[in-house]
Image 1 (cartoon, rainbow, N blue to C red):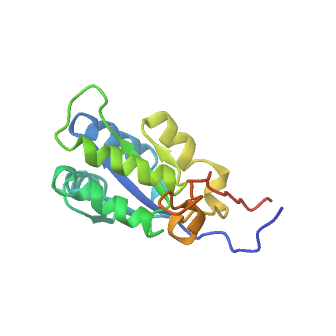
Image 2 (cartoon, rainbow, N blue to C red):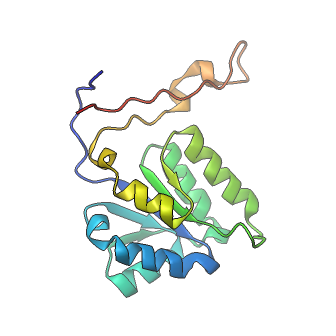
Length: 165
C-alpha cells in the first residue's frame, strides 16, 4: 500500500546523552556527520553545545535534562515536531530525573517515533533507507478511542504507514 505523500527532505532529530555517554554521542555524531547535516537537530543543553562547538553542527538547544530539557523534547515529540530520538542514556547510573527520562521514553513509544538508546541502534536508524520515506506518527490526541478515561477507551496499538518504493 502506498501513501501519497512526499518523502521528507530532512528529519527532525533529537539528540540526548547522559554525562557518561557524551563522548559516545560525539563519536557517533562525528562518524555520521555527513548524514546528520541533512537534518534539523535538537538537543538538551550540554549535548547540543558539545555538538555545536566540537563538530560545528547547527543544533537547537533546550534546557539541560535535569532542568526540564527531557520534558521539553518530550513535548515536541507529543506535538509531532520531532521525528527521531537518539537518547544515549546510562542505565548503570542513578539519575535524579529518572521520572523525566521514563516519561520521555514513554511519549516517544506512544507517538510511534523511532528511538535509539545505543550507538549500534543509532547507526542502523540514521543509515536506514526508511529515512527518506514517509513515516506516520501516531497522535493519541486525535484518536478519541485511545483515552482510557472514556467508556470503552483503551490505548490501541499505533497505526504505522510507510511509503513503499
